[in-house]
Image 1 (cartoon, one colour):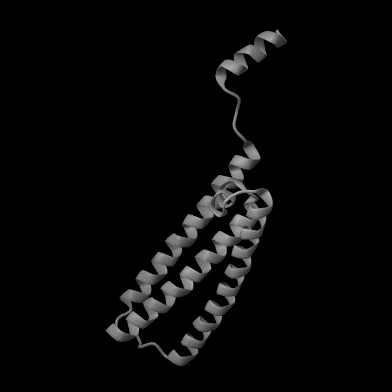
Image 2 (cartoon, one colour):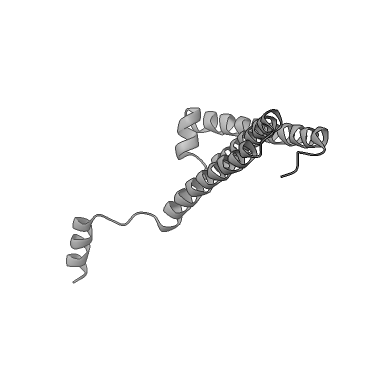
Length: 131
């Protein structure tokens, strides 16, 4: 493998990405805080039980900031150690992070779309009334 070229450009791109994603994260965190106060909930209760759209945006932005930090750390380690292994490991970590966020969103959305079925004993009572 060839050594990392254009390191200053890569650092500038990562710095720009970090600034952009961090500013989005701050806006999302403020939205969670504001809406939690309006609903009379704590910050973390709102994240768990409040508007899922706002918590999804916050979670995605948090993952983006963490991903940029992991990418920067992996790139620095790759340059320092003169090895591509840290960069590859960083890519795997970012992939796992994004998969975890996606899994959380899918689980929350599927629960909202499908809902939970009524308990079996309640279903039996309903069937008796209908028969």
